[in-house]
Image 1: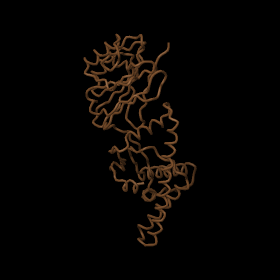
Image 2: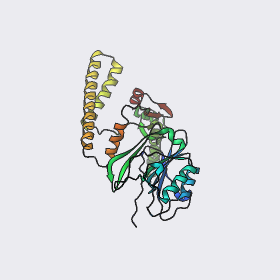
Image 3: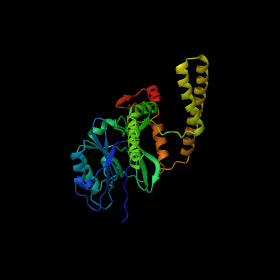
Image 4: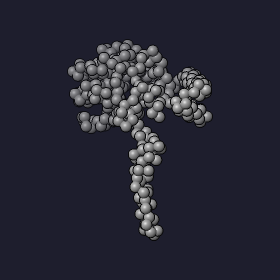
Length: 335
């Protein structure tokens, strides 16, 4: 049986999980629905559902009622094949009349404008619906001039959502501390050299090394909300390492000649990185000339352009041994 198909893609840095539909209500074989929960920083949940309702299928009103009762923050998007003049269609069909009643009963809102989403007619079949709580975050709805089968793609924008990010962790060994901790361990003494005594000594020494490693390991937890990383060539990484070594030397010596060398290397690193970012941006715009709606990197660039000029509140946060660091210079020093 031919269907429309449903899918949801979620940024991997967002805390989210798939919604098990059978936990909400009874789903029949004609329903094509997928949903995800995204955790917000106020510990509330945003539920997003992608829905396809076949033209000859009766819309599942129980599903709408159950998800509206369960989720305060709710977005429903999909090809519902529901025609109704309430959302700028030329006529009404049975499913359209039923959906209009569902929307009114559950205090939901259709966010579409009067742009048709169906290329073989002037009807609006692909709807974006949200709960009242999400209206304050709604920014824009557009029908894109890009056909997906016999439908146009739609873009619904919500802004100022404070989404909880997944934290990542990294570990670093402080080798000076490791040597200090290892020196503090009891010496391994061998009175008589036998296979048993050697085995015991090796075991004790290994245990001392393991414990010193644990005590000298610093754990970092961080949330990186910046854009994707640029791959840095090894030659540039080596230059960055040289810069760090020079900075340590200058911090100890405070000599003008060391400062001069450090400034020269820092300027060179900065110039190279700026050039790499510029080349990356040029490459993105060149790729956008051959826009492909199936390519996620093209959509990322579209979103970047859409958000140009909007101030971002996102920042990098690092936790070092349970102490939060947010200033860029302190984060750099920690590494």
